[in-house]
Image (cartoon, rainbow, N blue to C red; front, side, top):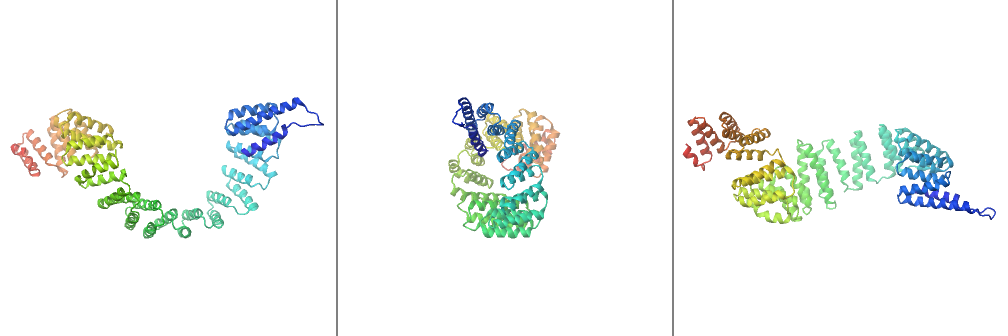
Length: 564
C-alpha cells in the first residue's frame, strides 16, 4: 500500500510542479497547484499516521482542485479502503485505473478492493488486465492464484501456479500451495508428488518431513510415514515432534514396545532439554489413560515415568508429573518421594506441598502432617490444601481448638467453590464438637451455599439438627437430598431414620435404619438407634437385642448398660 502511495505522490508532484513555458510564469495557476500540492502532501502524511479522517479532509480538498488527477484519486481510494468503505474506494480507484490503464499499481489496487469486499470474480478481471501489460509479474500471478482459491477455482489456481514455475523454476511456496490445492481436491497422487518436490527443494527441513509423514499417515501408508520420520530423526535426534509423530504410528500399529523404548531412550539422553522430555512423557501418559486396558502400554508408561523421574531429579515439573502418575496408580509412597524431591528443588512449590499433605493425610499419618504444617505454610502461604489437611489432622488427633484455627484460615485462602464448601462443612463439624452451635450453623450454611450438592454437609447438618430437635422438616429435606446423591450410604440412611424418629414417624424410622444396617457398614450408633426405635414401638426385647449389638460393636458405650 505504501509503495503505491509514494508512486502516486511523485507522479502527482510531477503533474503539479510549476512549469515555465517560454519563460512566462502563470502566477495564479502556480498558486492553485501549490495549494493542491500542500493538501495532497498533508493528506499522505495523515494517512501514514493512520489519521484517516484528517487524511480524507486534505485529500478531498486536493481533489476539488484536480478531480481528474490519477494520483489524488488513487490516494483517496486507498484511504477509503483502509477504513472499509469499499464503495468509495472503488469509485475513486476506478477513476485512477481508467486514467492510466497501463499503471500496474492502480489495477492491483482495484483487485485488492474487490478481494477485500468478497467479490473475487471482479478482482480476477483486474488482475488479468494487469497481466496483459505485465505477463510475467510473479506477484500478480501469485495474487491471481490466491484469488482463484478464494472462490473455489482450485484447478485454475494450479494453472497459474504452473505459470510461475515455468517463469521462475521450482519455488518452495508455489509447490506448497499446489500441494494444498491438490489435497483439497482429493487428488492424493498429485498432492504427494508436490510434497516430494518440497522434500527435494529442502531435504534437511524437518517441518517438511513432518508434513510429508503426516500426509502418508492420512493416506494409511504407515510404513512410508515411518521411513520419513526416521530420516527426520537422523537429522535431529532431539526433535520431540518427530518422536510424537513416530509414536502415533506405533500406536496405530499397537506397537507399544517401540513406543516406550523410543521414549525411554530419549529421556535418558542428557543432551535433550528436560521440558522436551516432559512433552514426551505427557504424550505417553495420555495414551495410557486413553488405552487403560493395554498391559504393554501400561508397562511402557511406567518405564517412561520412572526414566523421567530418575534422569531429571533436579527438574521439579518432572517430579510432579511422576507424583501424579503414582497417585493415579494408587502408589502413595513413590508419589511422596517424588513430591519431596520436587520440594527440595523448589521449596515454595505450592502444588507439591498441597499434594504431599493430602497423601500423608490419606495414609492416616496425621502427626507427620502436623509436624510439616508450619514449614509447609511458611513455604507456600495461603494454600487451602495445606491449611485444610493440617486442620483435619488436628481434628483426628482430638485437638479441635487448634483444628478450628487452621480451618478458619483455610476458609480465607483462594480455592474452588466445591473445595471451600468442604472446608466450611468440616469447620461446622468441629464447631459442633466444640459446643459452638451458632458458629456451626453459620459454617454449614456457608458450605451448602457454596455447593448445594455437598452431601456430607447436608447429612451432618441434618443429623445435628435432629439431635437438637430443631427445624426437623428442613433436616429431613436435607437428609433426603444427601441420600438421593449417595443412596447406599449407611450413615446417610441412618440420619433419615433418626430424623423420622424425632418427628414421631416410627415405622419410617425403622425402615430407613434397617436399610442402613442392610448395607453391612452400619456403626454402633446405628444399632443403638434401632434399639431406641424398637423401644418407642414398645418392643423391648428387640430393643435390648440391638443395644447389646451396639455395645458389642463399641464397648465404650457404657451408657447402654443401663438401657439393657
